[in-house]
Length: 201
Image (cartoon, rainbow, N blue to C red; front, side, top):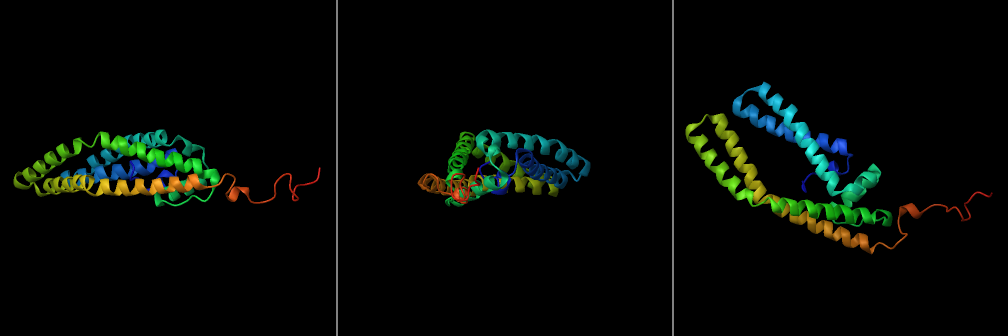
């Protein structure tokens, strides 16, 4: 969940669910289609697993970052972009949101770590199945099995490195957000109600 693209994070709850659910549903359906050649089964997988995964992902993202729902879409996009790039959001009004979003990424990372002990077991089982399917199964089944092995290998190698880099950038964005002086930001520009631009009563 940490590596869900930033543009998904700055969507509303419904759009988040649609984006993640559609991506997951298409992936699972493609595996079914390649392995079995049964397109009706692939459509069923898309229509069942896609919504289920999308709802679960949207709820998990919403629980991790509840304050995101209170932001305007443009502000939410600024917060997510700055946090994931490790940059200053440039607006003290949005600094608390940066801190909350960065904290959400850390919470999700810790939740992933709590389940990470399963991955070596999954790797061993998926590799054994891939070898068995290569020797005794049809070519389609072997292809899918090795694709699963590749995905597990990415989760064990590339994914932790990418998550750590993202969290390091989020930490830099937190430091920049804390350094913003109170009252500084684009929202402070323009005439004030008690200034020279105020309309006379």
